[in-house]
Image 1 (cartoon, rainbow, N blue to C red):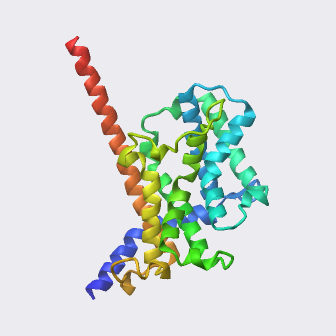
Image 2 (image 1 turned 90 degrees about the vertical axis):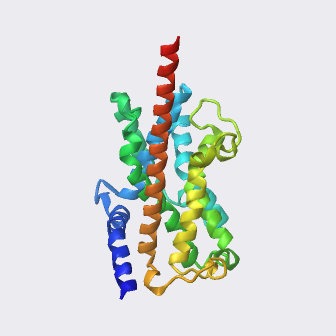
Image 3 (image 1 turned 180 degrees about the vertical axis):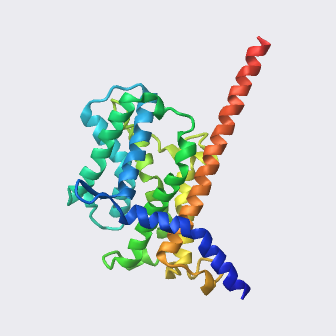
Length: 285
């Protein structure tokens, strides 16, 4: 009885995340004029914001070709790498829809921040949007993991490997951002550099996009009772806590939202400490 009550409370806590994921993945922006899901459209918007912010910091003047291509690498890097590892063709090779779905929001957001440039540099932007980032990131990671189980074209050696699930989680989670940063796609002169998570001084929060993807992969595949984790996880998942794919996605969203929130809060504390230190130096001079 107690286990049932705990399971019901658990399901109740996950319901808002499950409902949000369902809305984002099944509802189109407009059935006629822009028939693309909110999930991919909002992902395009958030990546555009991050790309433009990095471009401003670099002080580069980009051609339109560089501006769009660099942004698309940041959007699709994780998808292209993960599909390559899965030996599946990325959708961008056979459909024009991803190009419309991602380039149109990028152009709209570009126009918006050209008119209102201060919005992009608002210190409260990440504080407001981190829950959305958590939902979008979890959806990307868990949707790819769900594909591992359902697509017969994927090699059985990969689907049955817990390590592969962990690698895919990390790749999908950070692949786009790492690809763009490694190639410096928000600058006028692209060059190959050290992946950002391997650079000195990155630290725990700086590498969050990598290890959080692996963590969510473990949680998702474990809670959906994927056989790849039968001999890896040191405990048996109780039937009361075994979840559907949507339920496990909601758990992944919960994890990402908490971690992203903590990262934003940590960044604000660090900024406040630097500002306070600067005031102290000014007073002593």
